[in-house]
Length: 227
Length: 396
Image 1 (cartoon, each protein chain N blue to C red):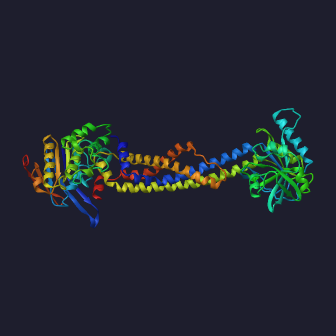
Image 2 (cartoon, rainbow over the protein chains, first blue to last red; image 1 turned 120 degrees about the vertical axis):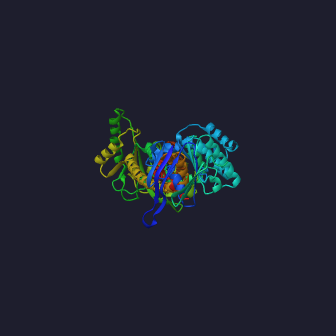
Image 3 (cartoon, rainbow over the protein chains, first blue to last red; image 1 turned 135 degrees about the horizontal axis):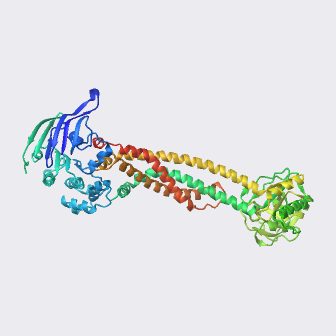
């Protein structure tokens, strides 16, 4: 469903030039669960941002369902963000002025949906937070906030979920719960690409890609991943 | 949840910031509302005066210098000089005035139509205090000064009687029945006038013959008030006819003087409005500034919204909705503050002007403030819409 071909990303010019990604290619099929690993500064987040259209590659192509999306204008890309691809961030990135429920409803609001409260509540229930719908992010624990963020990512039923160190700010127990949630989503047929630097988390993916200095140095396939 | 509902929630959470952002608009609208409210009150005051005295003419000696008041308006000064009008001219003035009125209204009545009230102004000392004594024709003057009320005693009926203005009576400690000496001639106070709020309060009125005898001005008057009795009467026409036909006098239609005053009032209003406009423009820059700050502070939020599907237009809309809230709040507070300011400052600027709030200014205040806030937000909103998601997260 998604293919990236010979992607490079270069920041800055001249002596300040930084090559974040160097000729990276990757295929994501339906139902994949890919973990991207690598040390800090290896280009993991940049790769994820380019896949998700949050950033543009300096060279190369991103092809989603047979169509190039790396050269789309911002207005066209909005449609992809509203449907096909959703994000989960390490810092949760919830709007602090809105309740958990309203945060989940946010993508629907931007799609122009007038209601969506029931739909959002149903998804909050799935992530186990139906009872905290009216809480503000500041009243929720890190794990709860991340589950709200995942619910927000799910509300538009995307086929691909991009997660940038989703358990990075959590203790093991909470991280475990979040990972279980991702596994559940993967079983439901969604593809997941997750950036992490923790090997024990990466082990649970079906495929591990190791980045170093902007290049893929290893690809490990682990059928089904460890549960 | 609709987009505007989200903005409202956000604004409620940041109400202090939003109020701060609207401050520039508030100050601008306050100034404009205050200026307009005061100007309107002052205009109403002038129109009121014209309504009251509008059909009047003043006939003065060709060279003159007496302080002539029209209600609260000063219409020039008239120092007691050597120049007087001879009483002989009164019938001629009446003939011209009545003739013109008959002509204008198409009536044939032979009787007197206009009120012709001659006056002799004299400055003298009563009990050691300087006062202006006004010799008047009691009957004609009474027809002219319809607003006069005698608070104590009675109106002038015979020679050597005096009617004292309220303030003069108080300052000179005069009561009904007292006798005062005017340049050696004794007169008895028969009445005290109610306060009128004009310079009449400081004057002493006596029959004109009494004044003429006391000050040796037999057959002379200082000025003549002519009341034409109808608001449609051609006062300016009468004035020019008198000026053409009677030498040594100058006739002025009060309306003309009031209109001149009105013209000046309008010029002042325009100038103040221009100042208020500048204030509003400065306020506009204030909004631009706070909005830019707001954009900067919310780079992350904007990034989040874009990441979950907000389009550029939606980001612009979010800021414009906020601008509308700022504008409406600014317009509301500006209207209230401007009205209060008018109530405080109005009476200081124009004595005796009764300021009233003007509900018709409320809606325009909201519209103007909203317009300004929206205009000021266009650029910041455009900047916000251009923020790139990846950059917004990296900047943290």
